[in-house]
Length: 219
Image (cartoon, rainbow, N blue to C red):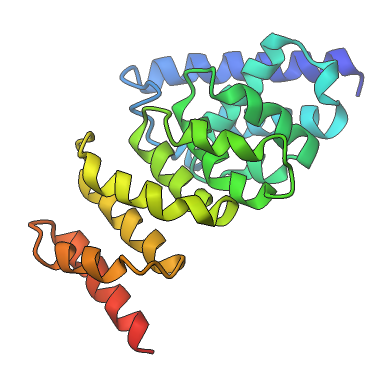
């Protein structure tokens, strides 16, 4: 399939999906995405297939800004299966990872943050984890903290403590849960202190996670 055909098919598929989304879920936006488009809509499958044809058939320097936007939009909508981002070549992943932070696509950002730990050998994009950690989106930052423990384990304790203390999000409990798991993962000497704080908190899920970590440590 020729380059222009690949690009045009993707753009048409994205436009068709957007029309469907407006019709079936008028309340839909980046912060309100049901994440299960793949269950009911042919248009979603067509869009994902078209995106994969582009990333399989073309190189990053062969596409325009509009096509990049179509790809990142598709990745954002594919936030349940993550089939597109998982199929990206290292070249495509690196290319899009550098660009996604400058877009409104929250549901693409957290996927790149989560997957960045699998690209530790790419020294060009590895430092981007610190931008994901300051993205302003709770879930993106939480996934970035998980990747940080792999990419920069020497920084993980510092950021885990920061996430625990800052209390800036509505779902602050989940930030603390991730902080606990990171402290456990890196073998932090401060873990016991935070487990005690968790035990005495008012957050039930946080208490449950602290209990699970204590049980793991006994094995």
